Image 1 (cartoon, rainbow, N blue to C red):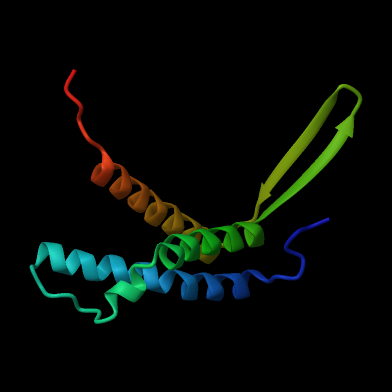
Image 2 (image 1 turned 45 degrees about the vertical axis):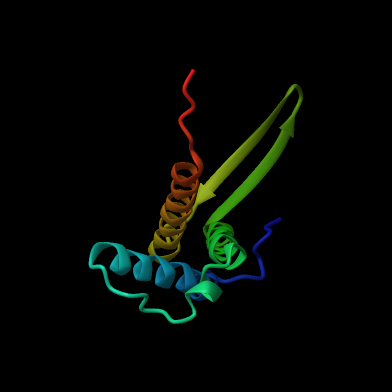
Length: 121
């Protein structure tokens, strides 16, 4: 039984691009602002900076594309359980999964660096 039987890989890729758009626009705006000292290019940056939209949309895009490309099979035998993960070759979906991972990694790294404090002993 497949969780994503109702979802086509093309549809999940399209939805993934739509869900990634705010995060990519936000990161591009921050990059231009920090590197080239330009003012904020996106006027409603505070709307785009919503953690639910940025992190949640990116995570949802990654999960949707992972469901469209990965299939699991669980079989039970006496004294063991075998789980098989099959990944289909769908370049667009796999690229979106990689982009989602990099964006989420950048958000986690930024959150760690911004909140990390060196405590003298």
